[in-house]
Image (tube, one colour):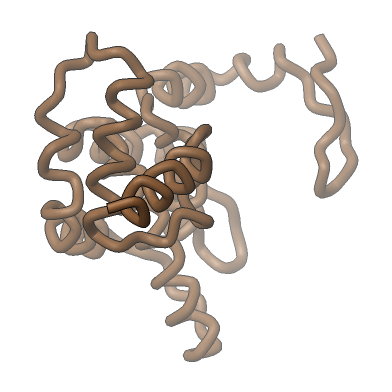
Length: 171
């Protein structure tokens, strides 16, 4: 079954080819476990493990994903840590003109632990909390941390920020 075309190489993408390999099926099913907008940053993070002249095998990708799941709970905090890790490693690689693949998750652990204070309150909320309420808690926390709301990729962030700024100005 043809899904579409690759936006990069323009070759056809077939669903049956993606799930033909057992490790490929495992990768696809594991991606669904990464809630809180973690899947896209995770894919970028996994790219940091890719050797310069070859691709990651599906089995290696599945192993790396399983390690991340074992060490971290999918959350906004993990999504943020994945994004920051990718950004920092890419910046280091650009300045060093060298692409050395990551060997472990130590850098991600460091970033995750160093940003835990930003997500202290949102991580304690239950999974059953409504999205709107949880977003408001998250926005409030990011506002108190003086985060740049133009870079927060959550629906309603800028609207909430404008309302909060107006409320603060009235005081």
